Amino acid sequence: MAEGTELADRIAERRAGVGDPRGLVGELRRALVLVPLDGGGLWTASFGGVRWVCGFTDKGALARFAETRDDSGRVWEFAVVRGARLLDEVVPAMGEPAGVAINVADPEGAMLFPPVVGIVSDMVAVDAGEPDGGRG
Image (tube, rainbow, N blue to C red; front, top):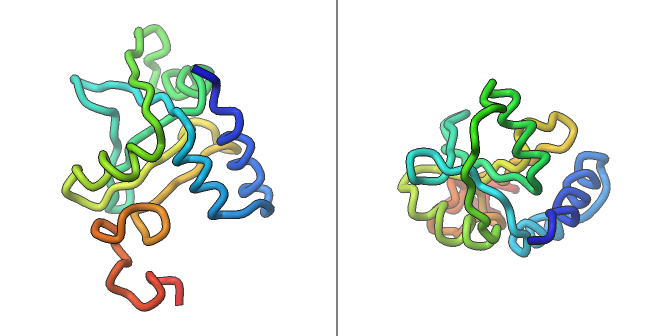
């Protein structure tokens, strides 16, 4: 598997205030991300009323996450999942507001993809019933 350098690069651009937000979502959709497994399922965390699927662009980002959890000695099993599958299949199947969090242990490289129109399916987007998808 190629490391997620393109996705990491697009995240860095957006965090620097440049780059195309739609291009970033497109890059996530194309990217293969590492998602830790927890009890047989994908690792998730709740924050701000949203269930976040935690994904990582490479093994280094996953290792930094393990260090923040004081689980660096643990052998972390993970699935390699295309971002489009997370957004189109996993998020809708969660049955609650859900999004994707990439590289959550990297303060300068993390990015959240919340459950809003333009990122997830309209049927599970929390702002789908609002004018302009909540952007207006």
